Amino acid sequence: MKRLTALWICSIMALAITACGIQGPGTQEQKAEPDGKIEEAVKRNGLKGIKETKKLVVCTSPDYAPFEFEDPSREGQSMYVGADMELARYLAEKLEVELEIQAMGFEECLEAVSEKRADVGLMGLLAKEERSAEVEYTAPYYDEGDQVILVLKERLEEFPDMDSFAGKTVAAQNGTLQAQLVMEQLPESYMDVITTVSDGLPMLRSKMADGIAVRSADAEKLIKENDDLAAAPEGFVYTSDGIVGCIAEDEPELKKALNDIFAEVADSDLYYGWIDEAYQLAAYLSRK
Image 1 (tube, rainbow, N blue to C red):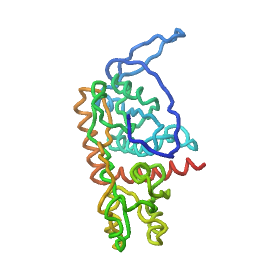
Image 2: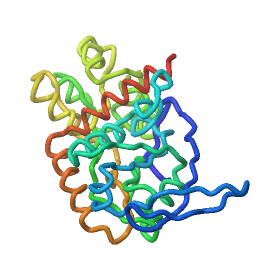
Image 3: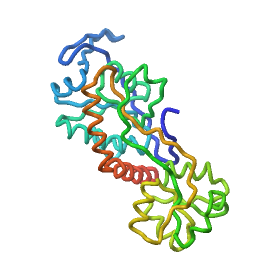
Image 4: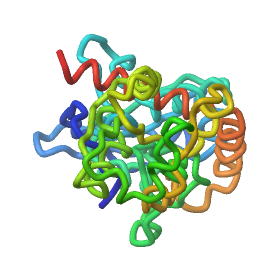
């Protein structure tokens, strides 16, 4: 599969865009179209090209919430939303250039990056070996990490393993990896869909829910803030490969610049905030 699977999130068809390949920043190549017209475009040239044109061109396939999708209530570039799109805007801000988002199909994104018609591809991408011949991967900028079940500390002994949740209610955010894991790995339990993890806490305390499926990082934070919570000793079976961006091959300066910014994003937990907001927006749009 090209990316992590998400459930019940609004799905928007990507706009397919084709463009021509050309040479060097500021140079142009002419391409004859079937109708006889001549199309001109400028080929990107790594970090140097970004600085010279004062523009960062990011391609994406906006059909994969919460990473990238469309908000039909918005227009122009602002209609592209999701955690990856917030990352794109952050990259442009840090590089002090204008951002141009180009929407197209997933495979077309790989092609556009490989042919240097776009600087970076951000589309919830996993670093699969079979794609490494087309593009070069950045360092991961998001990792779901371990997946656990949050419970009341006073009830911790009731849940020594995953089988103990059979017949119990486990809450999970709508359309998330956690919801998928509950459905796949806890088939004998009931899932209660929530908008945010915070919405599940009153349910947990009132025993309307017996557990909340969350990322381990979120569980650790909530346990520090709430002394009545604990993580069940056994978690879900899940290994995250991390989400990466892609760039054209042989662009070491661009790769280093992006990886430095990605490290900053990871250290400050910015992406976790973006993806939580994106989950909520996607859930809202799916109900409209």
